[in-house]
Amino acid sequence: MTHSMQVPLSYADAVIGAAGASISYIRRHSGATISIQEGAPGEMTVEITGSASQVQTAQQLIKVFFCLTLHQQFSSY
Image 1 (cartoon, rainbow, N blue to C red):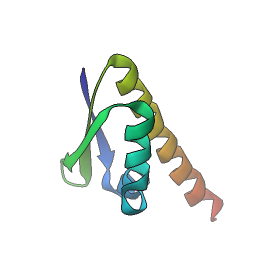
Image 2: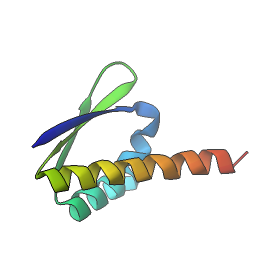
Image 3: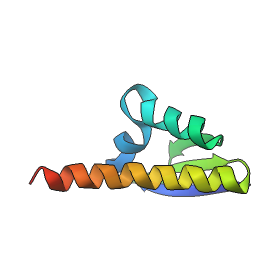
């Protein structure tokens, strides 16, 4: 199964992480294969491949990293 997600470039650091730490964590814990490509202007495409369970876990982890980034942005105000 393959699923693509469009991610705003402003969240690229959250998904990829310092030296790729976040994306490595997502790959390791979900078991999915994840590739990142340039998408539409201002976005990147995250392609997740694996079993339905692996894809779902990877999607959830990506959303967690989004939420953490949002929380950090709003906490600084």
